[in-house]
Image (cartoon, rainbow over all chains, first blue to last red; front, side, top):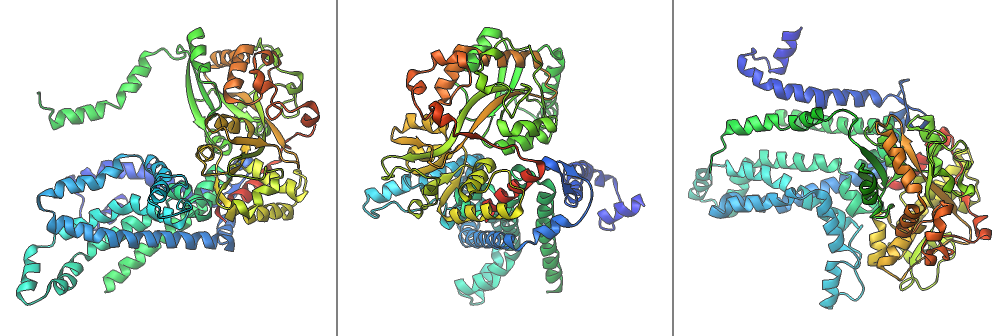
Length: 288
Length: 351
């Protein structure tokens, strides 16, 4: 039984001593990922008792409630903002990654560090700074007014604009790094061979570089879209009350509504959607 | 410079997490004199705790929250290590039912007698398990410069003129009870249809609301981002120190008053020192310094002579007796009502 499971985990290979290297991370993931996830799944079938005490009579009522039409707009809004953010990040990130791997030369190291710098400040501090910049009496409006470009202050904060800005600001490095990683690996001779065979710059890019960077694009999309789906801090601080996302819906169940079972059910559904989506993508990739 | 090898680094990395444990082991258990205090943000005079430490040698670890439901969630989830918390009157029965706080035994506080009779054995605390800390009202804060017509009614918070420039407290009790009050429905209702009406009224207001917040909106109010806000009295008066054009009104429909209380967390390991701190906060001069700093009203009768005369005479802080009679306390909700209210509020937030 145990060696069956072990061999499944190792993809059919026989266990060797070097597989022991996997042990620490396996223990870590079991304790801090698998067990809590199992707990979450169990919790999602429980009932919410008085003052949020969990009562362990199991049922499907939380899932039934999650399909309440009232939550559909929240889900759609989340998909729009996550999808839009991913798209903007790709459009901004691809040229950047391209420049970094093909054109940056000696400055590359410094530029990559510059890309990582925003990660060194806490997102909370960064978003509060954005609030100061974007506010009605904020820095940007002050400059625009001083320049005489606007007469009344623009509403920038708590709009789709500010939410997109915050999301793109935060997730752009997640897009650029995998793109850079895959563009970097493309042998330069391939591109040169395309030129030698008469391809112009554009068709060399379209027919050689772009297809070869596809794995990077897929990784970038996943690394941006997936965490975006669960984001609640950005929406809370920069989106304002009209643009709350699924992440806010979930965090509200835990912190405000004291309804952990319902929050767990929402989390499990989000997780199931993601895993299902990934599985479909794998199937499609295997067929294609 | 001696080179740090990878092995040294790994050794340090492995051993470092053990240091606090080792230090803790050196200390004899229980001998440390400390109180872990969990309070609302902006809710204590800045010299109060340092003075306490200077006088008694007891250290105070001070932690803040900005949302009492989130604080409740944290304590209920088993957050260990707090000794003293501040909880609103309506939360006391809930905390006691779930045994999250221990009643303060009678007779152990030598300064309890300083509390005004009105605040002793009150409906929310008939057996004096907790100690009233500060009290205040919920009303409307506004910027006199930009809001031309002084707000007089709660309905002003539904006025489309202030679209994007008003904020609501991020608090289920204040918002849902306001909606019920405006609809003429008593807070005691058990009818889901009534709560649905409250939900709809709050959702109707939502396009106007720039933010739901119980603390950070004050900065926006000071900066002029927000012009009209549902607010707690003392918070607005604190903000008015930074922006004198801010003013506070209790709307004509009336409002709720609330009493925040000091409570002993269940299973606290620093009971004696915590009680010592509560007693200290009850001393007339300390209570007055505290109330003068945070600009809420004190329930401490002996502290009144030391209250800043400007505050003492301010009817917005200490309403005159006829006004006091119109201030109601929040009704204590049953668990079922609590769940309905919480659900309404969580749904309003994502609507």
